[in-house]
Image (cartoon, rainbow, N blue to C red; front, side, top):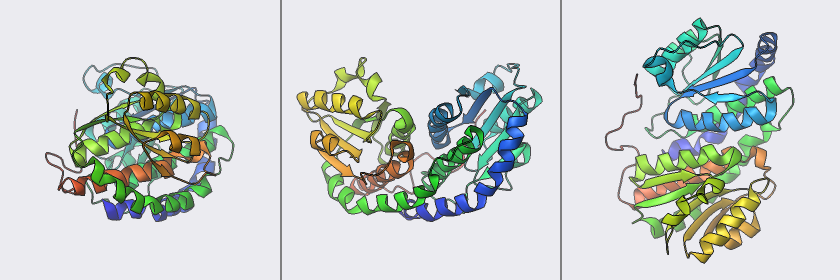
Length: 339
């Protein structure tokens, strides 16, 4: 897991180099289809990347985006009119049985289908009208890291070709490389959390998917019961669980979401909670019990990939601090197939 976390800048650079040339032609094909709905279908970490993709695509394209419930197709055999829809399957392996069944049925219902996967020879790639590939090589870790950020990067490419504007994503590999410099700081923090059994992870907007992803990493590699919320939702009831020293982990970049995070941190301070923020805001760092500081120049729009890297490191180092093996999580295997 640690090795693959550190491979991410190279993976992102290679993915941009290989996949960016495809997107101009893909954009033309999608415009010809007059797409007015995007449906994303995924499970696990891929579903968390899709949650990020939902925010990104709606903001950049103005097209409504739905996160598919595969059971609508696989268990209830619903018939949907998808003649003007883009349906995107997201899967590291491309072998998720239910995801591929949704793509098959969506195609039969008139949708244009796109695969986002790490495996060019996968079933998903053969089913879809087009494929965008993560150039990650084989992912050996059960806990996905480099394919998660690779999927996010491909959503940026899709947003550019659908939205018709450049987003500055060429900077992401270098920003991700700089995020790896936080490793020593994080290693210094994890001993404090070695006996943590439960926590809350908070992120909002473009980093909401990261809150889900870090919570998943803590559950699968550290066996911590981790709930996840947006900072806005956390005020609507869940705040009642917080007491003295209760751990709250936050993705808190500068930008549109900053004031909501500041409001939450001020309340957490009153409750004497233990807050650990991944941030590039000095004000947010001051309000937090502990902070992992990233480059102040990172625009919120480009923050999700470089911001999740310290979260991945935290989960990997915490697993070791607990005496666990992040590469052998109990009861799990790399490819999960469900219907």
